[in-house]
Amino acid sequence: MKKILFTLFVIYGFGLNAQRTDYDWKKMDPKQRKEIINNLSPEERKDLLKKFRNNMVTDNLDIDAEDKAEFTQLYDEYLENQKQIKSQFNPNFDPETLSDDEAKAKLQQSFEVGQKLLDNRKKYADKMQQIIPCQKVLKLFQTEGMMRDKMNERKSSRNNATGPRQNP
Image 1 (cartoon, rainbow, N blue to C red):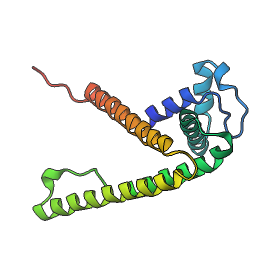
Image 2 (image 1 turned 60 degrees about the vertical axis):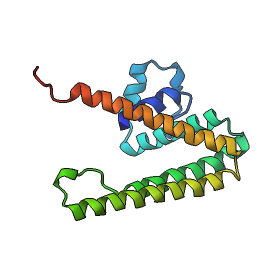
Image 3 (image 1 turned 30 degrees about the horizontal axis):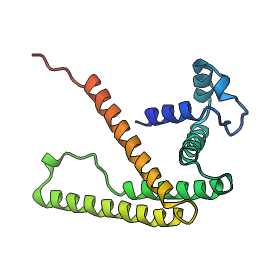
Image 4 (image 1 turned 30 degrees about the vertical axis):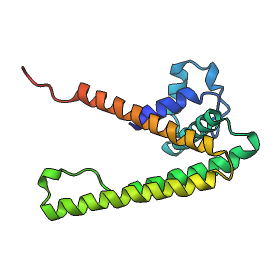
């Protein structure tokens, strides 16, 4: 899933420069881009991905130049908070192996984390509306949902393609 996201952002953001380089991503062939990206440290890759993501979001929302830095900082903060909230729930468990009490507790925990995610989204929607119009905030969340759906589709199709084969 991370590779898909990374590839999407790299493809979209080739016009950006890497942190310690001044590459012209648009003029490079895919092999060159891949080689450069593979030679980056994990931290540099993360920073590059973050720049590509932010560029894609601000371009998609057509954020005014004077508001880009403030919006980007707020958007990064929002995503970091969402990530921290999501980390409170470990979805890697087999429900079949849980007792009734454990399953009830896990279900309740999932509701609580979901509510925290929603509350955080509302909080940052209010903050973002002080920088960009409500329509653009709505478009941002709509775009996030579509990207999440696409990633889930790809993950599902990849899992189906690589899963165990059943003999007829």
